[in-house]
Image 1 (cartoon, rainbow, N blue to C red):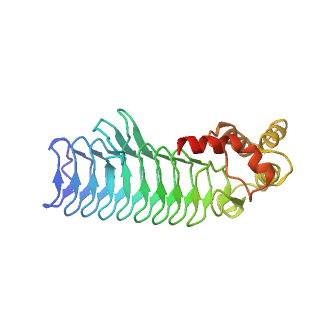
Image 2 (image 1 turned 180 degrees about the vertical axis):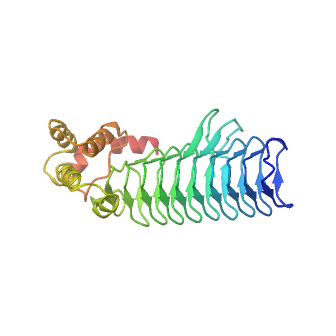
Length: 283
């Protein structure tokens, strides 16, 4: 078992592959399993009965809880083992019974940033991308290829469809289903329904009054005016939006699934008809 720092503490009942790398101060708990070619950074804690799959890479100071699985095989019927990875940054907390699966294809990867907090029994499927300081509450589920921006909060028992994008500093209410993209800085309430700008979260994050005012006006133009989303984006783009409003506009332009809107109106349905047809074809 080459590559194990002398300061690592490994319980006698743990099982490690022959090609495992453990950094300084790593602890491995009772019954844990770490497969070949896994790289565990300094001061990580691998809890009792946790499973770290092959090709997993962790930065320093990650904590993996009881019976959690990081880097397990993707849940794809007919999948054949390939050299794909799960990659974690620094300072993440992976609580009990969480599952994080590695990429589906050769060279693919599931990536989690820094200081994320994944609560009990949450699930991150193959090829997902999580930014920094993302929180997933108990039982939150991400399908394959989902992208979550920095500081987003996914509440308990939410289900996010594959290939969905959720922007930075979004708050998703518990028990919510999401199958369209969620624009940065908003709160989501009920299935695919934008409720408001995430003002509480933005104030806590120290956003200036000027930026808050611009975001509020942009939100009204996109979600509460008589303009279609396409018209609203063009109207805002014609001005001199701040960086945060520009982030919203760029996110909308990049959407392939259509975006979540406020409560349904004829305007919303017309503007998202093409995206809804695409969802049905990919379902």
